[in-house]
Length: 415
Length: 158
Image (cartoon, rainbow over all chains, first blue to last red; front, top):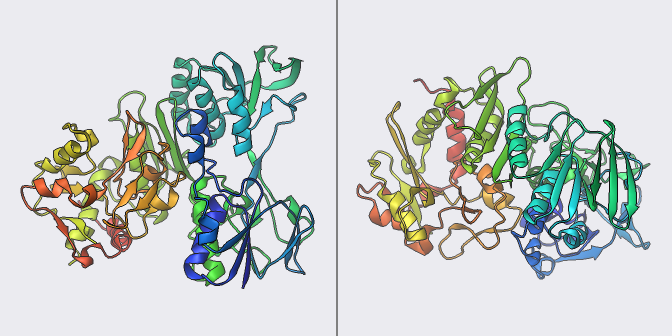
C-alpha cells in the first residue's frame, strides 16, 4: 500500500506513528510545508518567553523519518486529483496514493481592518513567525496584540516577560471568549492588568496607519488611538482546505469525517485542525484548533488507515496553559447554559476558580483559573465527562466519590 | 518490570512516603514536592495513596507537546525530562488520576520516576502498603481498571 500524509505537526506525526505501529512495510511519504524537522506550535510562545531554547522546539530527532522508513518531502500541496489518486505539489511533482491522510492544519486569519498588512504585522503561528517576532522582542518596545484567545494572550505574556510595553485589544466585552467563562476571564484580566498589561475590551479597531518605519497608529471606534512599534494578530484560524476545491471531498468549516476519520471520499482521511470531527456529545461536528484533539484524531486516522480497527469516541475540547502566573484551563461545555447546573468550588481562596457544569447530574464541562492543582481536577473529571457518568451526590463530595470508587478498582485489588 | 503497588487497606496515612519522596527529590521535606500523595477522606473513611501508575498507554506521554515525556527502558517508568518541559501543563490535564503536579518555582511538571529503580516511598512505608513488585497482574492495563471504575462510579451509595 502506498500512503501519503500531508502535514508534520501533531496530527500528521501521531497519524504516522499510529500507522507504523501496525504497518511497517507499506510505503509512506510525508509532505511537510515548512521545516522538514517537526516542531511544536504549542512551544512557540514558551520560546518567546525565554523558557524553552530554540533547538528544543524540534520534537523529533534528525533520524526520525529514516527510523520510521518515511520519505519526507518538502512542498506545498496545491491540488488533490481524486480520480487519479494523487496529490500535486507546487513545483509540479505528482505523488500517488492508495490512502491519503490530510493533516494540513489551519492558518491564521486577519480581521478586515484597513492597514492591517505589511512588515510590522505578525501572527504567532509558525516557526518563521517567532523567528521574526524574536527580533522585535526588545525591552521597551511597544506591541499591540489584536485578539484575546489562547495564542494572543500567550504572545502578550511573552512580550511582557521580555520587558515590552503590551496592549491587548479585544473586540468583545471580555477576554478568552471561547476558552474561559466570565468569572475565570475576570480573574485573568485583573491579573494581567496588575502586571501592567494595557487591556482594552469592547474596542473595535477601525484603521491602522503606518506612521513611519516600524511605527503604527491604531484608530479605535470610540475615538481613541494607540501607538505601537509592531502588532501581533491572533484573531482565529481557518482550516487549510483550499486545495480541495472542486474535488468533491465534503467540507464545511473543515473536512467532514466520520468516526474513523475518513472523509466522504473512501481512502482519504483527515485529522487535526483541518478536520471537522464528530463531537463527543453527539452534537454538530466541530473543528478544534487544539493540540490534544489533533493528537487524538491523528491516532485514530493512522490506526484506521492501517487496519480500520479503531473508532473515535468524539472530540472533547480541552486546553490548558500557563500564563501571567496562572493556570487557565477548560474542557467540554463549560459555560453552563439553561438546563445546566453549575457548581463553583466556594472553598477556594480569591483568585482561584473552579467550576463544573452538570446536566441531569452528568458533568459536561469544567473550567479553572488559578493553581495547577485545579487542572489536575479537570484531568480527573475528563473520563467522567467522556463516560457520561451520573454523579449521585453533591459535587462537593466529588473527590470522595472518586476516591471511593477508585479504591474499589485500584490495582492493589486486582490479584 | 517492577511497579509500586498500593494496598489501601494497609495505609495508615502516616505520610512517610510523601516525606521520603520529597526528600529524595529536593533534600527537604516539603510535601508539595512529593510525587506520591495520600488522600484521606474522613467522610467515607478511605486512605488513598496515589502515585503514577506508569500506564501502558500513558496519556501524558501521548499528549506532551514538547516530547518531554518518555518511557525509561530499564525501569519501565514514564519520566518527564525537566530540561525539555515547557511547563504547559497538558500532562496534568491529561492524567485521569491526577498524578502529575506542578513545580511552581522551576515552572515544570513533575511526576514519579520510580527513583531510578529504588523507590524511596516504598523503603519508608511503615505498614507495607507500598510494595515494589514484579506482580504483572497488578499492572495489566491500568486503563481497563479505570474503565471499570468509571462504569461503577454512578452506582455508589453514600
